[in-house]
Length: 368
Image (cartoon, rainbow, N blue to C red; front, side, top):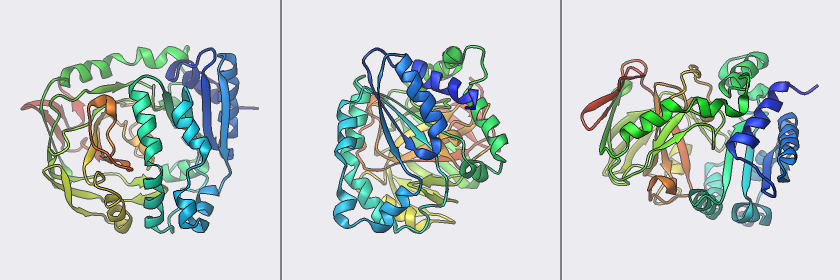
């Protein structure tokens, strides 16, 4: 019997997050590991009158690709991927790792090359989303891999994850709308201001300019679970140093103990306790990979434990995250890159966010 929580999550994804309606072409992307949730989403899209398109890969396909692909194959973009970016009304992507270390031994240069090849897809998707032509959401299906990374049993992780998605609410489809007031208030408060300074443990002291940029409140439309507000900082403004608290996973590779130093918006020094070679290779992917494309501030105090999955960790109330690489056009950000890699800094133990000289947050709690 299918977990009823998967059915409730499917309702949220289809009816609230992406608002699938009559005739909407809805692409559902995942691996076969996530079959219970994928099936629930498929059925819900049909009930909503949408036109579902399944794009499923097998467990182990990613590692096989990077191990076996020729240079021509690394550069190849399947026509189905191009069609999705250019034509789909809705995309629901369900992450479902069966092995969190599947790509650990892959040459990072091969991953960077494939990322560069896929850059036009990212650009098209972001442009269409900013124009309101394309609705998307990324979520995950609880697996033993995610549970192990979080230091939990699968049963406990399922309880944790589904609770973070608010599936237990009496009316799950409207739950995120009812949770949106505080996120909207904070995004409104910071809108129109200029300088953001973040200080924290490990010598973190970095200043960004957000003048003229738009802050986006996040309440379940693009990520599930959700809870943040974000913008794209002025591209040449980042100055100072930041030590990221949690391991950062990108392209199936884990990097931990990341420290970045910025001058005039550009990473001029980078180090990591683990995975430094991959970090440096990614920073050299293209000209925009050493600049910030996003500053986000987490607001979800229902997620209190780091899990090594940024979909959850960047939402933790009392954290900030920054993404090197591509900006979201709707923020006014202009950074251009094949990379978009979020990293999280925990401010709950001695950190602060100051905006134009006024404290927004102290020790992980909002004070405005």
